[in-house]
Every structure is written in C-alpha cells, then in structure tokens.
Image (tube, rainbow, N blue to C red; front, side, top):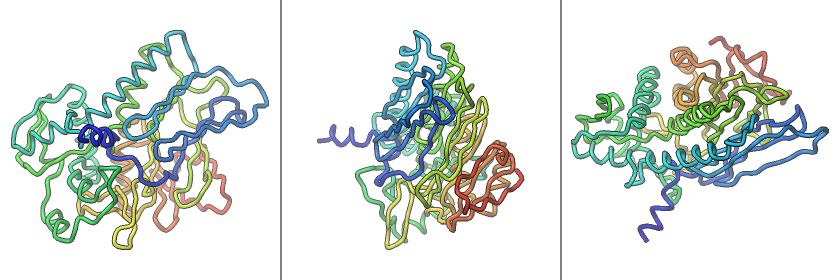
Length: 377
C-alpha cells in the first residue's frame, strides 16, 4: 500500500486537479501548415495537425511525462545521434523529478528537509547546490516574493498532493505563519553544505525546478550539436535557434476565456514561463484558492490571474513568473526591472492586461476586444 501511495506522489509538487486552461502552441512547420498544440489536461497531451499546403520540414519530437507535467522537446536539425541524446535528457529530467520533489521521502530534497528539521547540516549534490544558489538569487532580488520556504503552507493548503482536495490551514495556523515564519534567508549554503538555525524551514523547488531542467536539456542538446530546438516543461519553455522556415512562435491564451489571445515570435535564445491561478485550484470555504501563495501571508495571491515572463534562461523565467505574480499591480514592474527579465505580460484578476513595450513589435493580439496597456520596463 505504501509503495502504491508513493508512486502516486511522484508528481512534481502536484498534478493539477482540474484541466489546465492555459496552453502554449508552437509552430514546427510552415507559417500556417502544421500546428502542434501542447495542451496539458491532467497528464494528457493533445496534438492537433492542420492540413498542410506544402510538405513540412523534417523535425524530431519527443514527449514524456515527468515532474507532474508533459515534457516536449522539438528539434529542427535532427541528426543520427539525436535519439540517444533525447533519451539521456529524458532520464535526467525523470531523475530530477524524483530527487527534487519535496514530498518524495527517498528524494534528495526531502532528505535535506529532514536534516534541516533535525538541526543537522546536509551535503547536497553539486546540481542541487547550484539550483539552491539560483533560488537564493531570485529570493533576494524579489525581496521574498519568490520563496521556496513557503513549502509548509503549500502542504497545509493541500497543494502538494494530487490526491488531496484544497483546504484551509485554519485561522490559528495562519496567524502563527504570519507572526513569524522561516524564509529562504534562514538557509545557509556553503558550497555544497546546507544548514539552518530554523528547524521549521522546509523547501519546495516546484517554482524553479522545471525551468532549471529545461536549461539543462538545452545545454545537453547543444553539446550534441543541436542548435535549433524548443524545450517545453509544462509551460516553462526555452527556444534556441529557429525553425528552418521561420522563428519559433507560441500563442498565449487568456486565463479567463477559451482560445488564443495573442501570438508572439520568439528570439533566437529566449525563455518563457507562465504562472496562472487556474492550475492547482479549488474552492475553499466558498472562495477560490490556488497554489500561488504569498509567502508573507501564506494565502493565495488573488489580485493576479496570470503572468508570462520572457527571460534569457528558463530557470530565471520560471522563478520570475512566480515572483511577479505575487508582487501584484504596485510592485510587478519594478520587480521585473530588478530581475532583469526581457519582457512580461500581466493579467490581473479583473481582466486588465498590461504588457511591456519591449514585446509590442512582435506580440500580435488576436482578440480585437482586448485592450492592452503598454508599459515601459
């Protein structure tokens, strides 16, 4: 029974309880010939091919489930050694998903959390040490809006386990958290040795880990001679090079409506990540609740519906989309400048859309009724 439950909990942070309503589309053939639609419904991948007007160029694609989502790798300059490279990448991502899921007791991150709770130091792998350093950088730059130490509240709300229904932690627990809780600042990282004076600290790397494995996948592709590819881990993606006929394109969907809201052409090496309130959501005490918790209050941030971030690497984009989501209307733009991202789109809970002017020349809005407020980054 324990083994069966453990297998169910292998998803990264959690598999969505309801179908995800944000989708990325990316064109892998001619301008309008073939549309590959990555649509994650729980763990399903849907591919829609439209009739082609001309033969589609040869591309190689690999899809698999890991870290609680669909991983998609599309390569536009396939070579004989590519299958072996893709197999290596898949094994690496599967391993990372197991090791970095905070609630897999056999994983490295869970063992680190156990050691911290016991007041012990713990020597982590070089890979996890690097990821923790990247997380610390974003934590500091975002002034705590991105904080992996929010993990205890993620667990209390029930967002760590796909088998659980979202629930309120209760007023007493909320007051305790708000009165004084451990933060990432309480974590000491000395090369590969990690410790903390706070025994109540617990880490969840679900808001940065998928971006990190995307960057590792791109590095592996490049080491093996691939220079034109699109790697997507559940909406955390990185585009390198271009398709033979045109730049990589994605379409962005309104979090409050069905269908694509805009399309955008990606630059030759650009990463994109979206954080939205429609994933891992539920109704708690008659109100909507979702997994994007404000680390300061321990409560869902209800002022934002979705944030899409464009950055130079997927690790930063992944963490920054969470930070900007939490930041809200008053702080998101200044935080975007501090984090040095390339661009962003923010949907607030009331339907207002803001986008940085750096995206204006290549963001093509498809809904005529949508008004976008362009802002300077």
